[in-house]
Length: 80
Image (cartoon, rainbow, N blue to C red):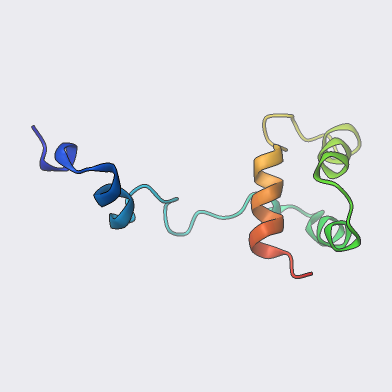
């Protein structure tokens, strides 16, 4: 058996191996609509409305424009 398979969950989490790969870009940061999205978040527009706009108006798929991707962007990249 591989030694890593014996790590406890706590030890694995502390090692950082379960985190996103370094350099993984935020999905919303790469969109041409990013500035408009950031401004909408600052005005208090809901994630649901922004998501529906990306899907219905801008043509992104439901699999791409997910709530979790938008939450991640808001929480980590939008300065209020």
